[in-house]
Length: 450
Figure 1: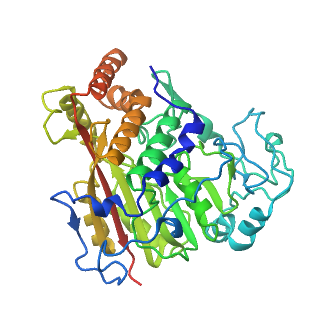
Figure 2: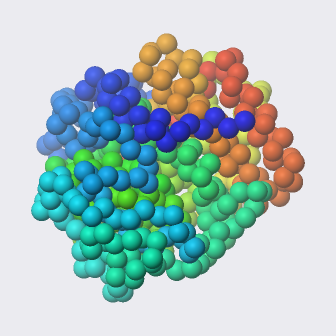
């Protein structure tokens, strides 16, 4: 039975994160795990030299999402008050119910337009081919496929693969390169995990790297439903934000300083070098084929002094009281260990130090690796961690099948029945109050020398 929740409740995560935050970062108030690492030695950045010595006020920093407005809006909706533009690619063919671009724009839109760098301009300046550009004509209608206001995605991106009664990314180049579905059920789970769980666990922080407030260009790789890019673009309207992904599942209405485009993170980047001030990656375990090459490309895309940050929640379950051992979770660990042993499919590049060492080899400095225990379930005594655990459990239960089916049947050769029976047993274990589970959450960031 699905445990997914309405979009309205998903968007309430921002309220929740801000209510529960006390202005300090959980990454600095919780003790480090014993093997937390500092790859770069003493930081040369004076702001970061005393890590955790002082914390910015959450309400004054672009590191936290903007305080929510009372008029909640579902993802994909827009209003004339927020100046959101039509997403920068055309709808799926035969999609006739897409909304029209608002015809009147408020002062809030003017503020965005006057202060923001155009994300589309950044793309236009950095690509050899004609970029996808935002809708600029007031009153333009998405449904008519107007080529002047939207740019069509190659039809191959819409040729979704149907497996195990689920929809998956059209694997144009990578075969089983991405194991998760791209349908509504999985997207709901992604939004819960990406937005609610990470935001709450990090007490509203959108990033941990000590980046400056005058960011001009930011890149979100593997943007998924676009939740992080949306939050950052809303909070920092002076920045041009670009989100890339292999599936066109992003919302139709976005801030004017945000641009989405189709890109595979394992391909050669289409942007100019030395373009971005900040590059963000989240939960991409199993999707990065070569850590050294990936780190090198991000290093080249960053301007001198810019930061690259990647955060990952581990696939394995652990527990302090060893309640996860001699249980189905041991088989879960063995299954993913076998999947991760396949070529170009590391699931542990964050926690095992592979990415941090790759970043060091390609030239990053001030590299920090922070590990924390992200609870699964409402077992923690601390009220804030209890809420994190509850939301994390709900996110997993929302689409546990989507997490495991393709890996089990496509990579390991299990039958559909074997896979679903296995997932059902794991689901029961996750719901049991006897297991005090947590997963390792890792954040790695590093700076390109100035």
